[in-house]
Structures are given as C-alpha cells and as structure tokens.
Length: 498
Image (cartoon, rainbow, N blue to C red):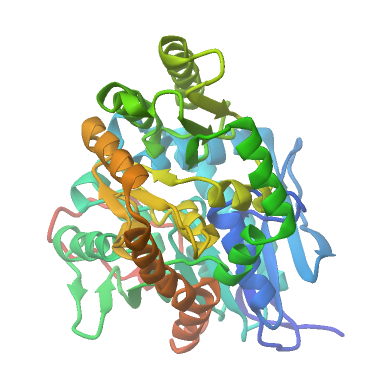
C-alpha cells in the first residue's frame, strides 16, 4: 500500500497505534544481560499490544548502514542500524561514554570535552532520526531512551514528525552546577525540550532538571508540573523503572534455581554469601566495596572462614581507558585480600568477570544472605530490585543499598549506606549477616509489596499513558541549534525560530 507523504520527507503509513522504542542497543539476542536497560525495555515491549524496537545493531562496518535491518524475534519487531567506525568512536566511545556518562554520574574529573566527539554524537542522532522517520505513523508513541539519543526528537521534528515523542533518562540527571561544566549544556537542554514528555528515575533527578530550567535557562516551572523554556512547554515527571517482579521471583523459585543453590552450598559448606552484581564500571563503587569487605574481615574476625564475597562484574566498555584501569585495580585488590585472609578450605573473594543468565543469577541472589549494591550514583539500579524479588519468603536475605541509587527512594527497608564510607558499609554488612529472621521477613515483605505495585508494566503503562495524554505537536520546523551565549537567568529564544 502506498504511503502518503508528510511534511519534511516522512512517509506515513496506515495508522495503527504502536509503541516505538528507540535505544542505543536493542536486546535482540537470546542472551540478555541481567538488570539494566535491555531487560526493562524487552519486558515493556513484550507487554505492549504492538510495537517496534529501533536502535544500533551492535555492528561496526565501514560506511554503516543507510537503511535499517528489519526482522522479528520472539514476537518483537526490530529495526537496527550499523555504525561507521569513525561514528562509533566519536558517538559511542567518545561523547556518550567519555563525556555524558561521567558527567551525569558527577565525575567531571573523568569527563572529556572534545568537539569531534560532539559532532559525531549529533551526526549519529540525526542518522537514527533519518532512518526511523519513514517507519513512523502519526499515531505512534515514540519512546526514546537514555543519554545516547538526546538529539533524536530535535532531528525528527526537523523531518516533520507529528508523533508524540517521549524521552526517558535511565541515568541520574546531574545538578545544574555539574551540568554547566558541559560546554554545550544549553544545546543539550534545548534538544531535550523538543520532546513532549521527559521521564526521570527519582525526585532528585527531576529537581536537578527543574533547577537548570529556572536558574540557568531563565525558564519557568509551572504549578501543573510543566516547564517552559527554549520556546516550548513540555512535561517532566518521575517514572521509577521496575522489573517483572513476578517473573523474576518465579525464576528464583524454580527447580533449576534450587539446584544452583545446592551447588553453591556444596562449594561453600557451612558459609554465608554476600553477593554483588554489576557491570565493571567506576560508578558502581566497586573499589570501596572490596575495601569494605576487607574491613569486615578485620573488624569482625568471626566472619573469617565462613563468609564469602561473590562479586560478578562482566566487562563493560573495555576499550575505554578508565574501565581497563578499574579492572586492573580490582584484580589486584582481590588477589591481595585473598592472599591476606584465605585458608586452604576458604577463599574470601570470588571475583568473576563474566555474565550470567537471569535464571542463574536469580538462584545466586536467593542463596545469598546479603545483597551488596553500593553505587556512587545510579539512576535506579535494577539489581537491587532483582535481589529482593529473588528472596525466599521463609528465609529472606538483607539488601545493603547506596543512598545514591534511585532505588533507595523506593526500597527504604534496605540497609541504606553511604558508599564512600568503607567502615559504614562493613558495619551494615555485619548487621545484615546477624539480623534476626523476624526483622528480615518484615523488611522483605514491605519491599516486595512495593516491587509488585511498581513493576515494569506499571512503569511502561504510566509513561505511555502520560505521553498519550499530551497534545499531538504537529510538524514543527527546526534547524540545528546555534551555540548559546545566554548566561544564567537569561531566556533562550524560541526553538521554532532556529
């Protein structure tokens, strides 16, 4: 059937209400890593009535791909693009992971501000929009995810898209004093205001966004929750991401999980397990976590010979220097701590640099007395929620959780710690190991109620319904934003006139 042409070169097909998810990577592989964006989006799309998942294929090929690869798998439609090596280096390795990622996690000291990175980032965002636009229908709800793709809406608007466009940030949003360290902070915020709805993980993130609008952009925060700046009025709200609580609890209670738990008990006879599961990333507080476990063995020597720390940390962005450095540091710490405390029949730290499937992870969570989640900054942290969901009602473990994870604003019955305080973490671990059954059950019960109510389906439904309630914007002609010279408190022009 021939499609009608819409303004700006967008080919509109027969309208069918769809959820279109756009993210840097798509989870088309059966081997989906535990936790994080991939699992949440897969679960959300499976529960939608119809939809499409658009993103990077994960392949780097000379020239990239002009047209998306289309395929279906496990009931989900996919469209993916390859990236050119130069674009991959600038967009992904560069601006996304050496500029925005450290900045959004309050690590200005690790951020690299490079004009070439920025240009590559804008180029790939435009490539995404140009490949996606012909696939869209005006009735589509387009849900763009995370810091890699802040500029997709602005590019789609220039192409004449009339779809409602929403953006969800999975990472923290930094305080405005941090964000202004980014040379092109005004351009990034202007691009975000091309969306109709922006979702954040926590009230801290939303407050930081509002502060920038009011203080730096000279905009307005209205009583109804809308914000006006850069010539547009949009909504910005909190949508804490959840997990498929029932599914994960079922995985943990399966016969396969029970066999894995028995295997762990045979490997660690008579002992208790502290578990950490994280991507190998400097935002996760892993160095301090290892130091806290060493402090635990020093301060509470009765744990020697019977408590094992199992840290699963699959490599992440290993071609970025800061990540390679972290890997070397942790390997050195694990070796030193094991050399200092190990006995013939006991190894204090089991440090594994490889991924595990979700079923096996669920079993390991269930078999562990303490779940240790200690990021310096985290948008949410789904591992914390998975740990709670995996526990046995009869004999649940204890979650030790950083106050700087978004999950801490929901899982208030965890033992909340400061991830910079090594002694405090050690004390919380000891408290978790010694906590009585009645207290453990009551804390777990209250957290589990919250996880069931605010699961991934509730997250998807609340965001999509809020986006559907926004007026359809119509085709808005936009040009590339020029660098802003506005200072704090200065209104920054009308985006429609750029």
